[in-house]
Image: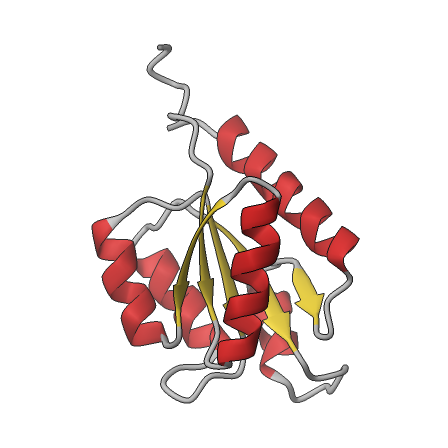
Length: 135
């Protein structure tokens, strides 16, 4: 294997405090052939990130233990090389955490309720981006 090539990684970490969202995404993404791990909190997600490699972290923005912006800063600080896609059930609000994130970090965002084709497309784009970057 070329040293600049990343090992093919199909692992996705889904972080959301809503059990029904975790279950839906686990089943849907599993049906598309991805390896899915779920975490109901940022604290649990951090533990899973310490133990495994994920090409993608798919995370909710509004969670009780840490908001999406703080979690993104944590991922950057720890130099986690995963791609990131945000999720929110909120519409546009100029004071929302999403606006703060997009101004500084530029991550894609999926809106709930999910458009399945948009979810599938966004994940494939993230997989391609992850594997095109040097190891």
